[in-house]
Length: 316
Image 1: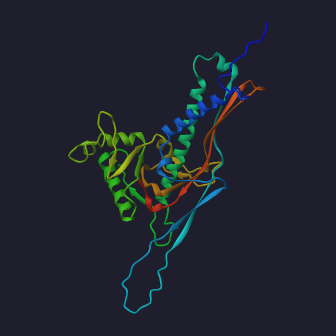
Image 2: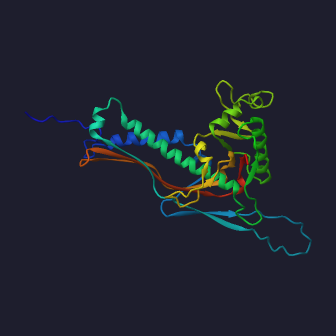
Image 3: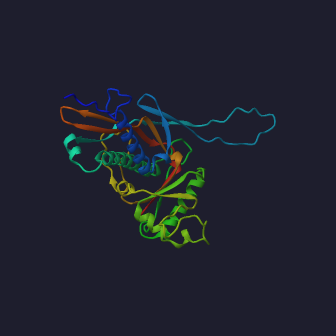
């Protein structure tokens, strides 16, 4: 009896790679989950490099004005310059090995579940580092001589009293204004408990105090306070704890004790992200181990650019 001719649905035009088309499906699942779960990356200044271990961000100070006296020579004004260097961290990966026999016995698509969890894990780690970095930015001194550092607002009731927290957010907005930070692309990131505390405040959702589209009570949403977009991030629950231990594999500083932080308020210019390798997915069947190894990976790094564009609200 002759062998059957199998149509390998994972191969491209009958090619030798029997998983080529499957890999694209897995990759899209990882990418979709990352984009859905990741909150912080789009709130930073992102730069992509094709090679190298770091990227340089120039920082330019402000100029001044004066009144000219007729006949006097105009010789120019000194402008301060500095730079910020952001390094690429070690390769960030999330991986899973799926035994062939387990997949055959299973009654649901476990690969889809695994890839979704891999994308979620990568998104959460990137968010956690960026949230911790936003705390460090608010605590940092000025980057350039004559500039401003970050802002720290102490509010003992920020985690339990919505009205007090709102007042502190307005203080942060004032600090950003006084530092000449653009009014667009400002964000306030809070953990879920703090977010829903804001939702229950009458002033935010009351039409007499704001726009009709600033969130709803029945949907449990709030959009802006003091012109600042309110962002709920579950990773803040972890980031706003004592994360002062050194993190293996990072080439930038993310470790900070943030256990007293209730919220971070920042502009997109506060933090920079350098990408060397964007999110990608690899999979390989190992005949010796009778299973498939799936790896989601990305190479990037984050750093403080402008501390004057960041502020935090802490309870002590």
